[in-house]
Length: 134
Image (spheres, rainbow, N blue to C red):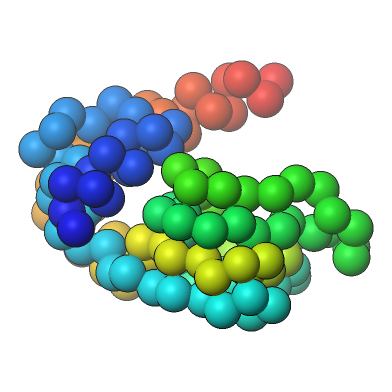
């Protein structure tokens, strides 16, 4: 599981600056989750339960009840919720059986607190994302 999760994690912009060993550290922390078709994974304006990266399946993303995109294998959502623990900006619903790797803030926080290199690289990735938005 860890090597597959590591491969998927390296595609996530938040983790893009991490080296393979650091990615493997995070991959050992993720948990496999399966959602059935029609099951809500994240709900708009509700508290986030963390970050998910899709291993297999498809999900529909809606905002205000309107479909805005579809997510497939390798897509991810909720990485900012790892840090802010704020409300979700969209609803994500499984449209097929959805197999994900998930990471909660309470699992992620100690990992970052005990590894300054990972924390610094994630901070840099966040700063790049903010720069790109302005």
